[in-house]
Image (cartoon, rainbow, N blue to C red):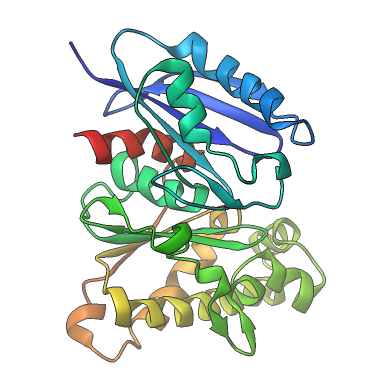
Length: 282
């Protein structure tokens, strides 16, 4: 019998669940989160997203969601957008409901793991996934597994001090809003139309991110950085300055082999939730 997995991506607006093989997404289901409701009601919505996907071949359920958490117990330690989940274990509730092993991790970590197992990072044992949108998220993959750290807090590149602020300020859409009074979509459309000043905004972003990646290389020396998120859809404007910044790394024997690649998956976090099962069970 083939092994199948269910991945769940819990967001403030919707809960998306899908059944996966180790190679592809097979079937997907989506429900509304209702983020202001009590914990028990949100759990019922979660269960209703999972139930139609269950078959006898499913051997585990992976859950990706925002916040800081104890990845062993599943207890949510801090979360901003679904306050009713704080202090509860999603993992425990899912295991009790479906009598299957469940695994839980931060959504940025799941983004990285999804790209590692199903996307641009499949050939790398050690890599860092970066997701750039409203803020900066990241996940560290070592030996094909997430490195979570205490309270699931490893890989929080958005909190790393840089240029008198933190990564979130200078390596996400926040840079565009604060420095150019525009959002990334408008700047991208202008850059595509040939506006050089808008193109320079992406160069500015890439130089900042490149500085952060170089710092990361001293600690991890990953084989690859996989760059995703809404801002990263402007890869054509980011790739060259990012590569130039990586090449400034002090040790060429490392920098020359580090790959910079755009993410391949839509909703990599959903794929990564399923990959939590693969990385823990296989």
